[in-house]
Length: 249
Length: 249
Image (cartoon, rainbow over all chains, first blue to last red):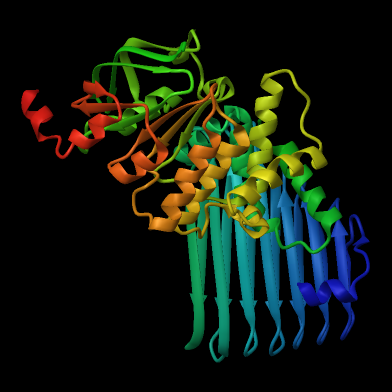
């Protein structure tokens, strides 16, 4: 990300965009605070696109094509129910994609994050870090597919999903799926859903931090891993603020 | 000297197993006490019960700290009263820096006393004096809490937290175990520098040299959840084995 921060002066705010195109060889940063139900993305040859999406309450899908040597980094924040989707085709050789996400649901909200990354060319790289926190009686479904069709080589795909259940009645359903039909492939994935660490909570409390605040600090720290890499401090602060506002304590 | 901590007939269990079986101990203002005894005697349990660790259940007895009923307070309230535990195994918290962690802790303590939060300059001043004195670098303050720290560094950070929070009862749980001579000196120096007329220490240790370098006022021998002998620092000389006390039980 560091090299990108040198060539980009400021993010472009484009709420509700239905199509985004990063022109060949160019670098673009797009922030969408009210994503449309469907948004087509094209990252042309050698272009880089950083795409930030604040979702919540409505359905929002992205359909992206990344051409040769293109780089697509998309970070989605889901702070209320609704179906958030993401389809990425790494269509040209050397194309790469990082499709991270954070979800925070509470009350009786129901949400889903469904992603499909297809490695349709040689030497393509994808990575995905999804972290979530779910409270109340909320339900989240994470469905993540990494598809590697036959006949490709030099593929590297990674997917990690981690979620915290903040109440005994909260639910997270995780369906990680690797579909690998080629041989020369490096793929790693993992998914874990658990409770807040009681020992961490106790440690914070022994330092004088009250239970509610300690939980907030720990969940924030857990989710931070995804947003830590955001190069723009203002944008990073906006993510932190929205995450904090979505937490039930 | 006034009694700072009065423990009367304290009984506690964990997972229905009795660990403390009627423990009595008094620590006066400004004193340094060594808590010794064989493994499984209940030394760490005692410290955790005094901190309010929810894993332990108090089944009898009373604990007064500065005349107030300690057992009625939540973990963070005890910290606000000045109770501090330096952990034998400090917990790692990815996603939050030591500097931020201490800011939360200090401000929680200030708010409990009806004071305003530290401003950025005041906070940095408070921290810098202490980090410098304890050899804690800026880089260590920026790293996530205890993540990737060596055993010695973790214990140095426990001492740093103790210095930052300025507690009035410092419980130090086996700070000396697994440390080399230099790291041990850091811990002993920190305790010696922080010794004050209005601050008491309780130290769990098996290391006679460490306890001598700190200069303890009193020594307690715990066996099977009870104090079986209390004496002055000359008791350190006599304690070559706990076998005699265990047999006497």
